[in-house]
Image 1 (cartoon, helix red, strand yellow):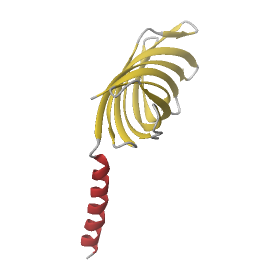
Image 2 (tube, one colour; image 1 turned 30 degrees about the horizontal axis):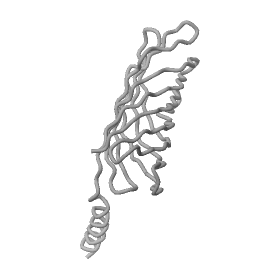
Image 3 (cartoon, one colour; image 1 turned 135 degrees about the vertical axis):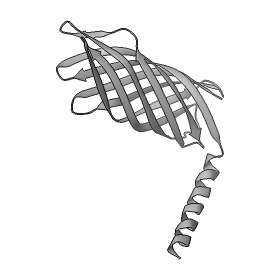
Image 4 (cartoon, helix red, strand yellow; image 1 turned 180 degrees about the horizontal axis):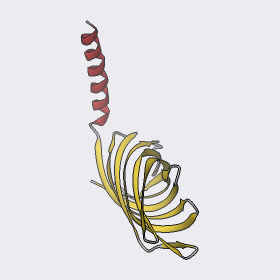
Length: 168
């Protein structure tokens, strides 16, 4: 009896969730990202190019994946610092305003690979941030956001991104 009741509850919740997910809007975009990079005594800024893609499920929920690579390098006390690549997966919560702009919050996981001097470093961890999308028309939007992409015992990376997205 408990299994049947559990099945009914899960089935009902799933059908309610699916009703909201009928309106699926995939998107892809590019961002320029300025990263405040701190690892141990190293403190510098790095530039990156981010490719992002995802989907909105209804007006509120979404999911997104990102891949980025450094453009250029930074330095700290003569030590060369490079952002080799990052990738991550995030859940997105949008706040529909009925206007051209949509504030959002995102959270997920980021894996980051950097190079300091001749040493390659690997960091990963929970990521979180917030931003705003401005719709230019039905297909294009621009966005600005702040994302704490990596924060652990060794590294803090805070990213400020400015980008464009195309909805399919």
